[in-house]
Length: 140
Image 1 (cartoon, rainbow, N blue to C red):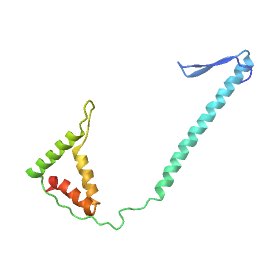
Image 2: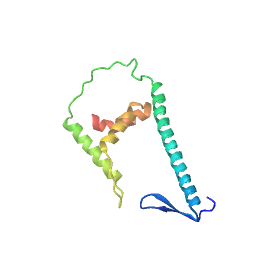
Image 3: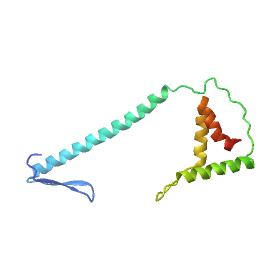
């Protein structure tokens, strides 16, 4: 702004205080700040509108991924003492191998076991054999 000596920002209430050399210059600073507020309000409204429209468009083209898949009854079995002992051994060995001196370590043996089981589900050949050997200790 031409002719304005200084414009300071007051951090206490977030307003701008102008120290202008004339009343005309002070009015010019106030008008400028009003325009800034209007532009910021317009940008905020436009961003909100774009977000609402963007969500509506994205959900309109969703496909039904369960189309043609029929649910089946699943049966399970209770965990026996062999499974519990194998899972405990796996957990202890995993925690032993994850410990680093001087550092904190947090690991979930159950999460690792489930991730390995999902990986084995998609494995084939040698990889499948190795995964079954590893997981077989726990699941057999």
